[in-house]
Length: 308
Image (cartoon, rainbow, N blue to C red; front, side, top):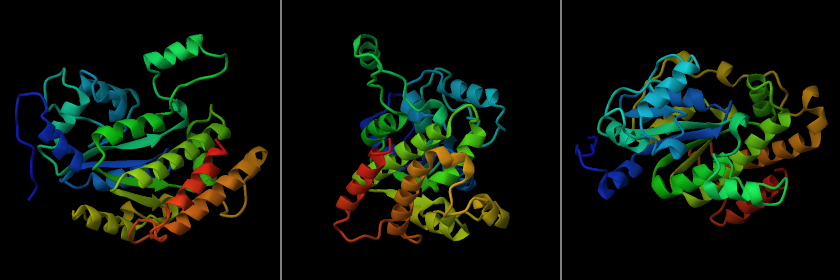
């Protein structure tokens, strides 16, 4: 039976936040890596409520959180669905964390989908970062990426939560992202993939409840395994997860002509992806290397950093 957080009009207590942390659920990946279909399937359950790219890690303390998110999705012409439209659960001036606490009174798992895009690669600068950019050396920035800021917030607020990370072949991912963000470069799209994959490695090394899903393996069987991990039963329509959702006309071996100027970088990124995919079980969604696997991850991180 779901344990609900006790209703109270008082400010959030430490026990409430600890309970929220244990029941947090986050779907994370770069844009166009399968985060949406996974989130949509999970949101079919009455026991789960995942916000759609609410950026809680940036807006958790924002007053009028519900109105802000609803206005954002309305402006993007998104359909009003679970996760895109937030119900009125607290006073209009309530912030993001308070809203999540209210959701946790009604659902077993609460959290959000986070899809990093090339449109906003860097987090909003802190006062210290603004100072450095103004007074520091020219062409040098200390601004943190959104992935770095996400890690910082989640480790302090949702360390014990469950994370479902999605990774897609970098060639496919960059081409798909570029079709959505045509005013940005393919190099920008590759940078998002690199920063997000680096974040996933960091979180797998540091957090205890991280599961990794590879886009070209995602199937109804994979989703059933995710349901087992969460301890929920979510019957999904047969057409909800099919081959067409991960279909691509791109070859797994070749580099498309449009990526030719960046061939070497994409070939190296694809080698990183293939190595990482070979380390994870499609059944447990966990690393299958021996107990002493950290050095392999750290070496892979170095390869990623050399491309960033």
